[in-house]
Every structure is written in C-alpha cells, then in structure tokens.
Image (cartoon, rainbow, N blue to C red):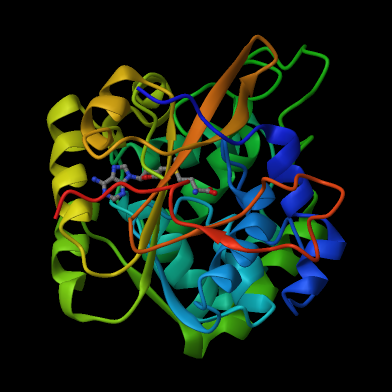
Length: 326
Ligand SMILES: C[S@@+](CC[C@H](N)C(=O)[O-])C[C@H]1O[C@@H](n2cnc3c(N)ncnc32)[C@H](O)[C@@H]1O
C-alpha cells in the first residue's frame, strides 16, 4: 500500500489565491450550502477547481452521486467553473430539500422564516423525518433541514444541540441564523436551469452515466464512521464494493474522497492506490485522515516544487494518481 503523497499543507497551497489566479479561475465563495455536514466538502471546492482546471475540465457537467450538503460543488457552479450540476442522494428527504430549494424557493424560505426553533418543533420534524406521520413535500424538505441545523454535529438522527433538557452551553437555535440560511437557500434558486436533482442509489446512477460526458465527484459515507453518521443511508462492505465496481468501469473521469480504511485500499489499490491526504474532524475527539482517489485518465497538479514556486511550475504528473482497473 502506498503512502499518501500529499500532505495537508501541500493541498492548502493548491488552494492559495496565487494558484487559483494562475489557472485563471474566478474567486470562489465558500459556505454556500445551507447544510452542515460532518466532513462536509465546502473547503474542498478550491482544490476541486484547480484539479478540474489542470485537467482541462473547466466547464464540465459535474455529477455528485452522494451530494448531501453539496458543499464542494455549489461554489464551483456559482463561479462558473462547472456548467451543470447533478445532485443525487439516496435519502429522499435530502433530495426533496434540494428540489424545493431550486423549484419552490419562495415557499421554502417563507417556511424557514416562520419556523419556531424549539424542542416542540424538533419533535414534530423528527416524527416527519422518521416517517411516523404523513407530511407534504415542503414539510419533508424542512424536516431534514431543521434536524440538520439543530442536531449535534448536523447528524440527522442525533439529539438536539443542548439536549432534551436544553441546559447545555449551546442551545437548539445556535446554528439557526434565519437571515443567513434564507440567503443561502435563495441563492440556490439562481442555479435552477443548471441543476438536476435525483434520488437514486449512487451505484445505479453511476452505471447509467456511462454514455454521458461528465465529471463524477463521489463522497460516499465513510467506511468507519458511516453507520454512526448516516444510519440507514450508510454503506456496508458489499455496497462499497458495488460502488467501486461501478466507478472503476466508468469512461468518464472521476474523483472520490474516502476515509483512510483498509477496505478502501483493498478496493482501489490494485493498480497502486494514489492518494492525497486530507484530514477531517468528526468532533473534537476524533480527527481522521481522508484520501482522494482519482481515475487514471486524470492528472494531479505537480507539487514537487511545493509551495514557493507553485504558481509558475504547474505541470502534470501522471504517476500521482492512478486507479483504474479497466
Ligand atoms: C459523506 S455525505 C456527502 C457530504 C457532501 N459531500 C457534503 O459536502 O455535504 C454522504 C451522503 O451519501 C448519501 N448516501 C448514502 N447512501 C447512498 C446511496 N446508496 N446512494 C446515494 N447516496 C447515498 C447520504 O444520505 C449522505 O447524504
């Protein structure tokens, strides 16, 4: 098993304004997603922009089979680095939220404005999210959003911030700044013509993409922590394997982010796993290492020259990433 070749510092250097400029990329905003996701990819969007540019993929259609909060892709779409975005998530409530944000923005914003952020509402939305009561599509969209914003670490089946007694240091409404969240939701409406929302299993979606011309960025549930974070929408080993088979037989270029687990090395290492090291923070107590793995038809910006000379000496190295068993 190869060791990751890229350290966090090197990745950070790739995101510098100097590098962004050298690829003639526009300024990218972060924090466009209305969701909070453990390991959310808002911070990865600058890297993704450089990665796409260095592979002549500016303007591509960008597919996120596990979109969650779409933290990495929204800034790319907003800045015009990608031309179209496909947001897919198997969780129907998440798909419903994106659908409402794009197609029913005014109603969704109005409901967010009206909502009382307290325990009573939390119980109401928990019941909707768990399917124990009937609800309209907008209520379903709101339920996943409300729980994401009011639960500990944004985990949909966790308890509310501040606990049921609401006696913690932080309380249920501490991450629910309505003005800011409504602004983010309304911003999404701008992408109506450029975004498609689907609610499918990621592997089925990827199998179907064979013919289309696109770039796939996959951020599957973590192997180790997935169960704790996504409960029903996590992957078992068989699902991780099925997804690996689907993606490795793709002609379209792809990039995956994963936690650094033995299964990931097993699934993607045959032609030599080539990875980038990132770190993610689950909570204060848990910091993990995350890997990026890409298809062999992609190149990584050369970091041999490291931080100082980076802007002038971007060349591409084939050897850095190559995982493709076709
Ligand atoms: C790691 S999160 C994605 C986070 C996202 N990149 C972000 O920045 O917010 C993984 C997502 O995959 C979804 N998911 C789980 N199983 C899935 C499947 N079989 N097909 C598609 N999506 C799935 C989960 O609902 C979750 O939203």
